[in-house]
Amino acid sequence: MASTATEAEFVITRVFDAPRELVWKAWTEPERLAQWWGPKGCTIRVAKLEMRPGGIFHYAMQFQPGHDMWGRFVYREIVAPERLVFVNSFSDADGGITRAPFSQLKQMWPLEVLNEVTLSEQKGKTTLTLRGRPINATEEERKMFASMHESMRQGFGGTFDKLVDCLAKAG
Image 1 (cartoon, helix red, strand yellow):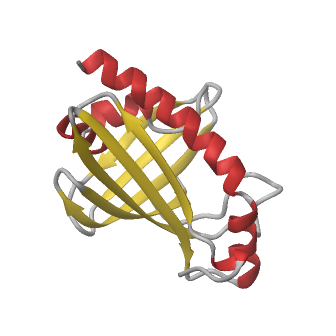
Image 2: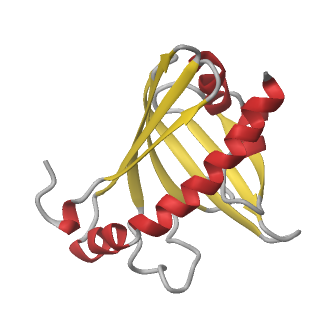
């Protein structure tokens, strides 16, 4: 499929000790998403969650009071409880797409990343696989995305640790 580093898809898989239905709810209910989405050390405020194709999850991340960093998903496909496909991007407070707020990535990070989350259950445990790749991106943006896979793996590792805690509280 991907033949060069610039075309490389980001893939991360994690097994959760929870039934698929519960993991699905964590991805699709605003009060649950607010508990775990985003890097460790941030809090999430859900501005909008419309679980339908074309709908939006618009949220603010806060690492320190008074400093919001906005993001959004635009859902393309929702197949409960097994698959979510969405385009993720940084956004402004109104939900418009913006560049990454980090100075070192500002002009090189892709504006949009297409993500696919699949969930499968075996013996009460759920395997989550997330696949992401830039869309409508320049060559420079694709190279930046490929170069950040290890950092993304660490970031999602922390985010998924928060999901473990959220699932444990729900169970």
